[in-house]
Length: 188
Image (cartoon, rainbow, N blue to C red; front, side, top):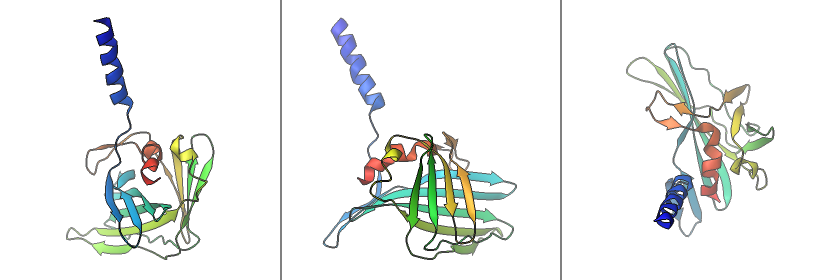
């Protein structure tokens, strides 16, 4: 009986600490090459005084090259400022251990698209793809990210990544600080 109880405890503890399986939005291999992309994940949300902004991310692997796609969505009744990406844009991820991981933007200018909805809100949607170098993301596998700095063409913005975030958008609980720890293995 004692052995059965210990065995049951061991099995339950393994299932509690097991990593979740990778969830892909796209996973294609064909004659041209391979492409994997994880589902979008909410990294940052700010809702204040009728204005809202969201940052979603996904990891991708294109023929062996790991990338991070960031999608910025801003919604306001007032004018929404355009921050553009260019070849000099960067994303700096400050880790809890003090190290900084730098991601380089692909050489593609993008200022986003401004869309007015039927309720009178201006919505700006902008995406950027940033490349990891092969050696600079090892620390992302084990250390939480506390701050994300995005360098645009003419501006720089800092985003504090929370340990846990209950989104007003969909009511789900996200863990932005541990996003890379939980998902970077999906693109290796």
